[in-house]
Length: 276
Image (cartoon, rainbow, N blue to C red; front, side, top):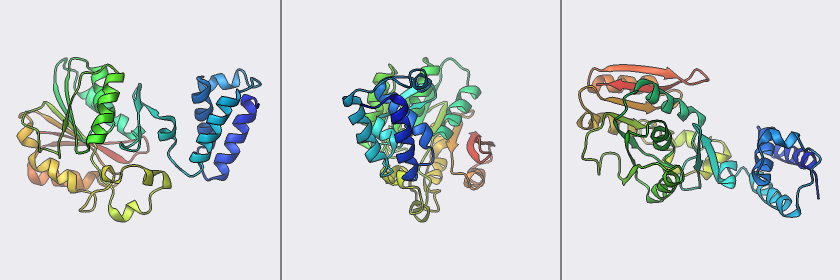
């Protein structure tokens, strides 16, 4: 049996040699997951021996991760905006950039009661994060994938969130108005998809790629969103790092509106807020 520090060293080296860039962090995540410890706690007992059963589970995950299979799928969950979200290959892995979308919606809308629609909910991460911070909001979340909705419903139950989930292709099954509409739609072009990191090719392609230079879903959402928003309603969209200006121009052509763009932590234009 190996000690914690020996396993950490082994994990770091194996991950790094397989081209995993964040090998130090991932080694800690893998080991802390199976030892049921916080990452910092690994260094409080570095000589503690790991059981043979724990060691086997660690090696099994290491072997798969070295093929660039996403670590989040292997561990089964990811932290997103102070919320634990379970993930599997039927849903995209929530990204840190999307936390900015949640933060912007929360900071802009302090009303105790709002009707909010999350289009393309995937794992349910955005809707669940909002509901936990604003429990009186009425959240409706949609997706075109039934398997994604199964995961989203499960995550809502785990987080004790009452959210209405609907199978819908954008507006297909929506027949109500909402104070706020949110979407982080697919926006990667087919040509860019081929060049993505190996990890992303394990995630559902339908949830990543879009026709028309990655702007197809923005056009569909913008074309009809006014039918589902009141006169002072707000639409929030997450975009690719080089798409925000194009989406803003598209929105301006449909109807003049108050449009604001917000950068992510890497200073890429990422979030668009449109007030009608």
